[in-house]
Amino acid sequence: MIEIHNLKKEYIVEEEIPTRALCGVTFSIAKGEFVSIMGPSGSGKSTLLHILSFLDRPTGGSYTFQGKSIDDMTDQELARVRNSDMGFVFQSFNLLSRLTVYDNVEIPLLYSDILPAKRRTFVEEAVRSVGLEEKLHTEAGKLSGGQKQRVAIARALVTDPNVIFADEPTGNLDSQSGLQIMEILESLNNKGRTVILVTHETQTAEFADRIIRIKDGVVESDNPITADRLRRGTLK
Image 1 (cartoon, rainbow, N blue to C red):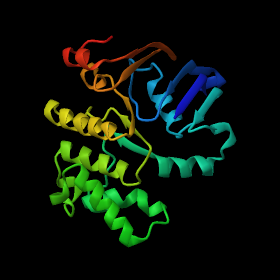
Image 2 (tube, rainbow, N blue to C red):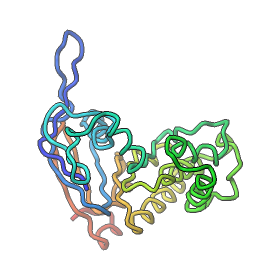
Image 3 (tube, rainbow, N blue to C red):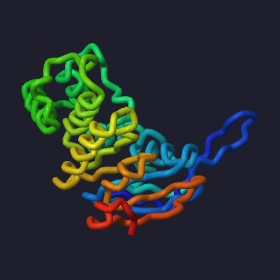
Image 4 (tube, rainbow, N blue to C red):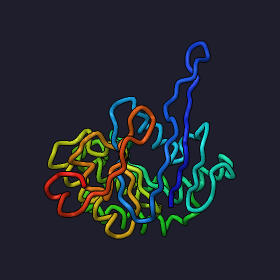
């Protein structure tokens, strides 16, 4: 599904001095994988996520998504693919607090050509999949943190994306709520969805099939996790 080779990203800061965020990152992610990306603050993991999710473009190297190079895609094409094939879950939820759960989950569909009647079906199915159907018409601002993140996951699912990007999805949650969120993401992956998770928490990262560690803009390690070692919390 995703293949990047020698990916680089530079930002121009004060006095036009380039700052390197990514210095040649190479790896691939197959359809249906669950991959965690870890790294300390400033390692480049957030920049990498932004490029993988079409929120930014690299300044060097290559990125192929579902067999097509992003160099051959216009910004409009990237936006279309991002809206149809990608779902997003963020640490800060990014919900509109005065809107209901239904209205928040429906937002991605408003940018599609799906008819209102079908939109309702898709929204209700997405909300049901995260166990919040009884909160469908509750304002998002009245929900707990764990419930808000479940709404965010439902919003990510409503367009039936091929890949879900989760950026520190448990960062603002207590341990029990965080566990529930990771179990939902794990369940979605078990049903065939590709999940790419950025986190600094080892326990959260170990829900994945493999962990890619980024340091100073390069891949420090790329290790698979086996089920038995996952239970013991150690890496292969």
